[in-house]
Image 1 (cartoon, helix red, strand yellow):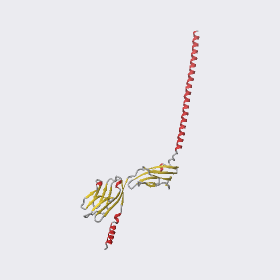
Image 2: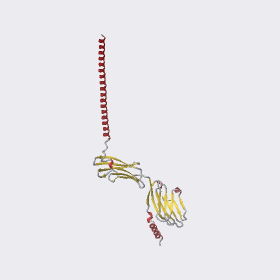
Image 3: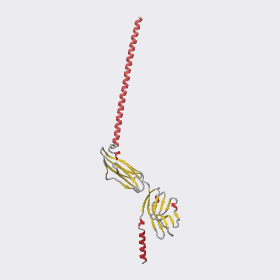
Image 4: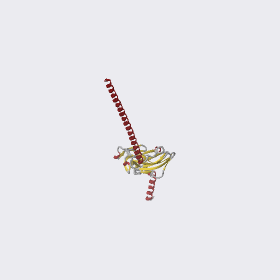
Length: 288
């Protein structure tokens, strides 16, 4: 067979053998958690061959045909390999720098890949909060806007129109977005009268639930600040007027009582004087 044709056939065979091994499995891990990977086929070593785990094409673990092993120094204490019929790869306390491609294979005269993974390390999402802006409210209908916001300053909002039986999510607003950090922020209607703010990624999620009935139908729409201030001002004036009238009335009553007592004392003194004069006169006549 012509050498060129032979090389072409060999390359086809290699391509055929590698056809299912090119699949890369995505794996997402929360920062600080552990990573467990496994190989997709039994590992069998022959002389002059070795089994490797690679990270970004650099060896981090090697198993030789005589069962001796070697772990690259940055991974000492973090990496454990369980050698059974299938090899398990266990890496502790993942950080952002551990994101990347991990590959397992038997290397020698022929390279055979038995595992390919694309690992992404993510932070847990920040808490999400929902706030309500009540647009209108009556005994049988209600319109409100719910705004979902996260601690890292991402926000979306949507408007909901409700009657006493059902609610619907209006068109417009921003119902969902993917943030720069790769998280998803959504707002949606759930179970008729509940609005859910959802903040999530592939490793964690956080939700905030707004109960529409807490704001609609039973509670009137909040008055604008100017009307509230005017109401407080009028109330204060009324109270002050009532206090002034009451004080004047009480003062008048007290003054009247004092005048009555003074009059009675004056009359009593006049009577005593007259009696004394009469008594004195009578005494004088008796002496005569």
